[in-house]
Length: 268
Ligand code: WAQ
Ligand code: MG
Ligand code: MG
Ligand code: MG
Image 1: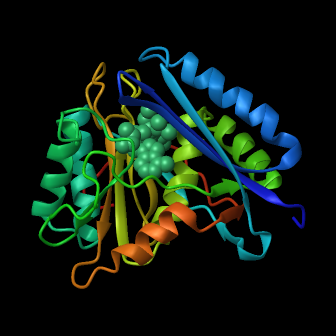
Image 2: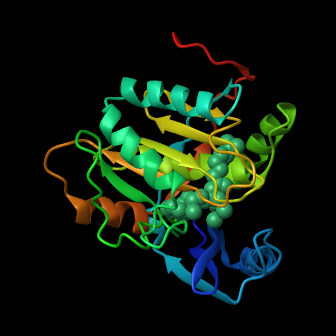
């Protein structure tokens, strides 16, 4: 833990549109392997081969690194994406997000979120009361980075997810991202579904309820996806929040509980 850590990030695009991204924290010895894996991912993405790949590697000041725990993971079985979105809405309402704000987030994600109808590279920031979009760059969104698992926590997570038949990059990366997002100052909850056409699962996450995933939050084949971070209404300190999401290094050294899938029911 005393060895210097680096933030390594990849962003790939095709036709000037976001294709794929990744972000990890790593010691110097692992950077080459991680960089190769990220380039491979960008070139072999199911939505096409990247035309431009940007890799950024920056040393992180080890003195600033906080540790943390991943949220508990729950899977709720739903019949289809309509059912999934109703369930996700019910959970978000419990977290204090208004139906108007939820509908705005879901409409934006379902229609591509970026002004040109494509998926954003980052996340939307949405006022949890009135649903207003607050991110300064509406085409790009806010990209969260500088978070990862310790080696030991990664090992435990992989074993735990394997036992549930859930070990894939989407789940691992989303859990780590959500873990950082829900502890950010002013955020009450997150909503996400993938922009990968073959991946229909998504989740709602909050500190109180954990990471609640649904196998269907969008129709199979849909290339649109995104993330919405809901902000407590009132005074927003956007620069503090963006700084935390983009720059605060966080290493998760403990995993949460990983629950078996169960059918969704309204009174959960
Ligand atoms: N920061 C902010 N927004 C991001 C980031 C990031 N680091 N990475 C992705 N996004 C946004 C961006 O708008 C993408 O278009 C969108 O999220 C989807 O990204 O439990 O795979 O990497 O089974 O396609 C969730 C369910 C999977 C996992 C999410 O997202 C599970 C997923 P993707
Ligand atoms: Mg991506
Ligand atoms: Mg991703
Ligand atoms: Mg994707």
